[in-house]
Length: 164
Image (cartoon, rainbow, N blue to C red; front, side, top):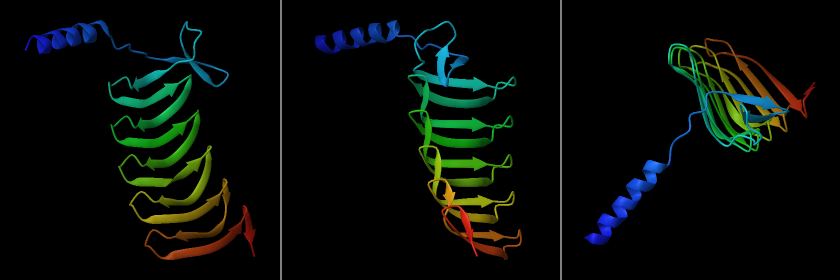
């Protein structure tokens, strides 16, 4: 019982001494983010807000570069963008939404380049495009649809060039 009391007291003292630092803006110096007045690249979370108090963006920085999940919101509170970052470059799932909440575009990035299948939807949620990318270049088949769901066209690409 005494050990439990001592551990709880120590834990309370320790957490009371730790404070969460609020950071409201960062300076960009050559692509690296710093706290105002600091000489060390910023590491930590950054949350920005609109004038109305609604969250505008949230991301984690490591050594002055975005690292991990990053999210943007519209002023109405609807999610606008969610992407993953590693070492200052977008990597992984990237999703964008319209203001009405419908998904707009989704795909994967590697080292900042679009890779694999990317899908784009119209504001009503109807699929508009499908494109495959190989190292940020269109590769294979691109399909496009009308709002009514009928296919408009198909185009074949190889390494970014249209195949006739």
